[in-house]
Length: 120
Image 1 (cartoon, one colour):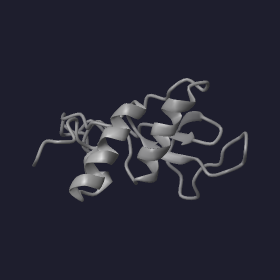
Image 2 (image 1 turned 180 degrees about the vertical axis):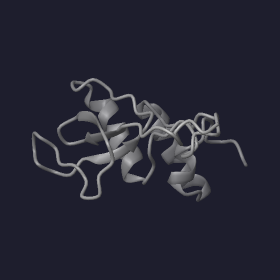
Image 3 (image 1 turned 60 degrees about the horizontal axis):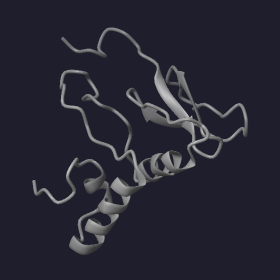
C-alpha cells in the first residue's frame, strides 16, 4: 500500500537565508518566506531542520539544495522503504567534494551515497 497515495501530507519548505522551515501543503504559485519575502524551497517530506543558530549545518543544507536534491527518505509514491542518504556535517560534504574533484563523478551523485568511495 502506498504511504503517500491516499493522504496529502504537508511538505517541508525552508528559507536558507533566514534559516527557518515550515510544513505546508504544495501550491502552484509556491510559498514565500514570512521574514524576508523570498521564495521558500521545497525540501521534501523527511527534512529534519537544524537549529536556527547552527550556521554550519544550514550551509550543508544549502549545498544539498543547490545541488538539486531534496530530503525525501522514501520513494515519491511511498512504496520504497530505502532511506536516502544526505550529508549532515561539513566534513561529510567536504569528503564528497574531494572525491568528486578527484574522480570526475558529479557531486549530485556523491551527495546521495553514504560512502563516497563505493562504486555502483
